Length: 184
Image (tube, rainbow, N blue to C red; front, side, top):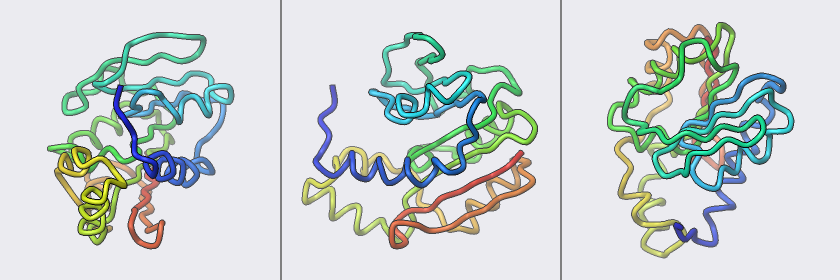
């Protein structure tokens, strides 16, 4: 099992707190890049009809209304179209070689009116994250795996080009992270 630094659960909690107000209860949640353990899913599963977690590093299992599936996130999502009411990608998109492809896949999997919630590190945070990795505040390998850093305009364009009708992009954590809420 991976060894987290002291700060990683704190950063994860801040991302979860950012998206929770936008998480519609009672529907189907798909957490793309859910990791193991599935912290977000464990937090909200009792409020949702179904929670589906996708990641390459998970042990697939089903328990109650939770399904965890092994999925290479660089490929097509293994769920049918119009499955989810909400999809989350928390600190995932920056690891994608082709981020526009995963956003298009999220659009496909979302039901009409469904919401995509994303957090990514901001472009300005790259030097800070690299320093945090050197100091051991975050795992160096996670920062080295970053394929992309995004401007607000780039994120807005990727979501609009995928077909989302409403896209809201804002900074949080003193500008170190970006939050996106896109509605199908």
